[in-house]
Image 1 (cartoon, rainbow, N blue to C red):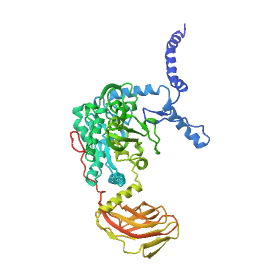
Image 2: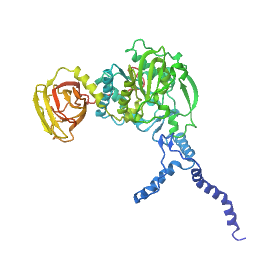
Image 3: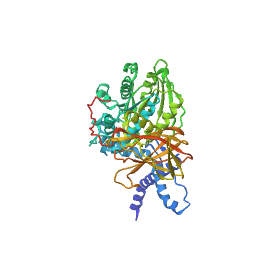
Image 4: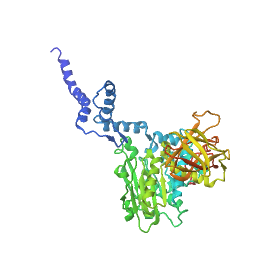
Length: 551
């Protein structure tokens, strides 16, 4: 019969066409009946929301892109398809489907992106950032020291620093950690524990110190880090001793893939070995009590602040500023110190003003003998540096007290705008005549290679903030080389002490008085030669496997 061959062919192709149509429609059907997640825990990001109905031309033009982003994040079977894609890339091509994950040798996975760039030493650290980092740590140390509190900064290592032999990328220079810690050893006396050397020295003895598919250390690595910290603290507290390994009760067991595997949707496909420090190690000392703090970064329940108390432990009250690397160490520190308050600080806030707020709140509410400030090294590549005026003043007071007597103000302050200056028996009276009163002080810097540190003895009519401006030689006022900062002052007779972080500043300082009503009295002004200039890059070499010294 004519056309029968075509009819049979069409019938034979009908099942294939149905399968094809079903395959095309299935993701949309699943999308329609499946609840939509707002956050991808694996990818550690918020998923795109469905765009609102457009009510303007601009919104209408933006709607297609918003819809596409929503559909890409929520279409049906996305998870299985992404997993299949990840398996093909990882096992057949040895590459990663996610730029934030680096596939290493032997099944090892590492954080990629900025963490891997830092491991390679790219880009080189800006000397100004290194100097700011120094000032922030010193300001914390000095503010706490004025209150009789010790400060220890601790740096847990990235996995690639301990196991570079499993990383495919080739280092080209020192890491940010190398830059920062070398600079601090040369230019500062802040106590810092670099945990890379003790872990490198013991990794062959203990076996793997990190999970293959997770960014965190395992129980062995956490213990070695804890032990190095306690051994350093023994210089301050001689009766302090770390727990011995046999008292820890390590537990080893197989596990699905860790957080790095989860970022490429393969946690369920990959296996790993976990070494735990069980909560039972701490016994009754591990009982957690909630702590109420007011912080900008919201906490998920697992990150909320808490405290532990241990009868018979070292009689120290400790504030532990931490990140996720401290999770495995909590049973150890809980048994070692009588009282510990643990505060998990969001990575984007650490180290910055969030730390200062936390320290203030805890110190105001309870006794504190020691602050342990622990920050994993990969976060050095994403520092949001923010200094606190009150804490910086503590460092300025320390620098001024350590310096030799300097040069006193011998000339009358110059009125620049909206201020009357008169001399009386107690100094210089500064009477604002407008909302923006500014004077100039002529102060000579004693030594050319040191930062000036200035002490103003003054009476302020109210709590206020002084604006301090200085200028680089050879530039016009108002140019980018004219720089400034703020200094808080309290009502009544007191002081304002501040560093000028430049050896190139001229002797003329511009002081903008506070906007509060009333007369300021400047009793005296002195400038001393403070610390040596630290803006010159410090020669740096890379820490490599086999370096077992340091800390």
